[in-house]
Length: 162
Image (tube, rainbow, N blue to C red; front, side, top):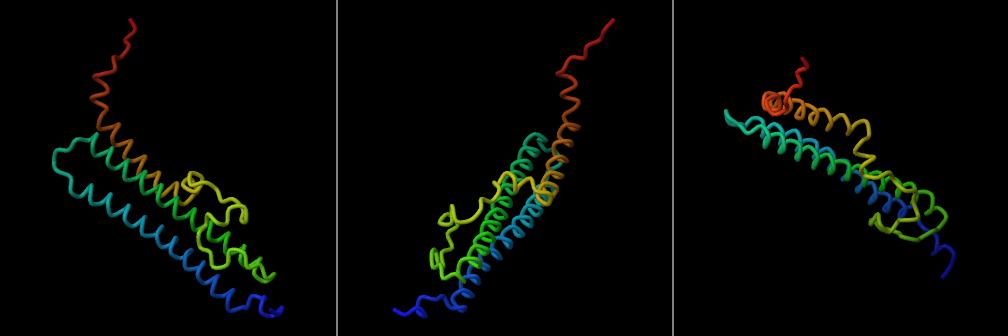
């Protein structure tokens, strides 16, 4: 085998980074779709409310939808960041004829090869996700507190000092 056969061609590098870029694009698209579904489900739940509704069940449903979609969005954005690190690693290693993990798209295989990406929790609390999901969550909690205030007011005795 000659040295020319061991050299990674530019076409191979392009094909590999195209595959990785497709994964990055898919993760970004998933994040976008998650946000659309989140808004749609919130709208459907609120639009189909009967006249009389159990406020506790409504708020629990909205909070659950909020937390689930917030987590999924964080997961997809974190995975996108991992693929970006893999992309950078491939661009650094392939010109040096490193064929290790060539065409490998499983992010778990790159453990120790790429820098650690922040946790899903950290990604969930990034500026963009925090405000997108926290504002509806706070609104639901505030509405529940104001709707439940008469009940809470009757349950909690008020201290009257004479």
